[in-house]
Image 1 (tube, rainbow, N blue to C red):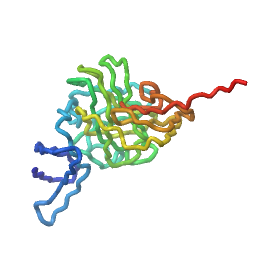
Image 2 (image 1 turned 45 degrees about the horizontal axis):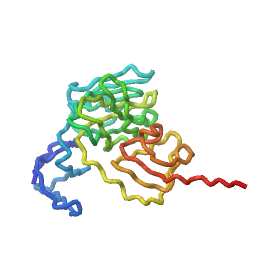
Image 3 (image 1 turned 135 degrees about the horizontal axis):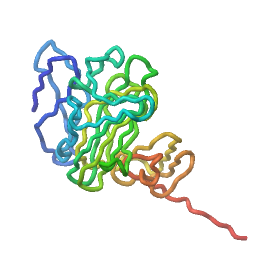
Image 4 (image 1 turned 60 degrees about the vertical axis):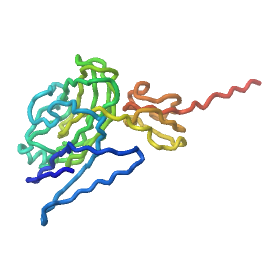
Length: 283
């Protein structure tokens, strides 16, 4: 369907404009890759089939190749940095890992990068990106990345997710489902969460209209225990029935969602735990 030519040793993202039809959701798809030149090798990672209903790219300059679209805030905390940075610079500190292009987003400490994005309709969207940590010393790693959206004046903030501490020095992909209430322009933000000299390197930020994910196939007899400081990311649209959920050591019942428990839950999905009820004995 598509021929790709690669001429250097830097990972790049290629998107085919070719489409094909699948008769039903139950039909399997076989993806084949082959080389056209003998005695040559390729490294390939993260192959993804995207439904055409996912729509157009909404983020401007998600690869940070120019300064267009983004606003960088370096005023938060005592350890902060937020800027587009060149891969070729500072490799002795930040490492030689590259995702694509010549530039990436550097966030240190509580640094923030935001962009006002127009959403053509309300509904589910998927935010995806690649990230790795500073390479030279472990003390400069492990800064969890916070993702959020708000009104364009910065009010009414909704957390999309907080990643685990970013420790890997090779780029890895992250993807989160979130919901926008209605058509309009909203502010999307990425920020560090640790007020220390700890750096995340981010590239390939993307937002596309999503096909709402089905509720995962998890037994209703499952129990979850979310400890203090941890986050339960419900990356689906719908309600998942479970036997028991504990948040911070306390059993919760009824509908469990980001709206009800924002300190413990992210994502658009919901979990429902049947109340145990109460027996009263009168003698």
